[in-house]
Length: 172
Image (cartoon, rainbow, N blue to C red; front, side, top):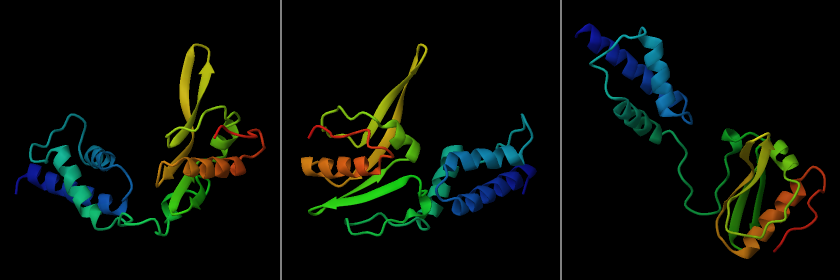
């Protein structure tokens, strides 16, 4: 086995090992980190597989270790991968389920709800400083349906979460 093949084998093993330990991190980031940590600047390794092939290999190995996708709405929400400060509300109406995700800071910024109820899964605001304007997400909602009643229960849930009652009502 040549030096290049040994180095490629070492990097590949390292990538697979790190990929199965860090299930929810980007495969590309793990690969880049492993390559940078194993090679000198401007050094090449012709035996190293393409990054896309390494990523496929890592994701294939991870697939068995990740939680299964839910098959219905009665699943237990594993909050171990979402911080307590971000997972805010799990609400339901009739046979539908909606999960509201927002941080306290995002909710604090959500002070005006003069929008109509539309089929959107997130609430944003615009922040302007000088000539620069940025769109900032305030709340994310995973909804199992697009009915008006679902939006009403989600928006009421968000209003309940607000630190001060700055939003008194919303257009329904």
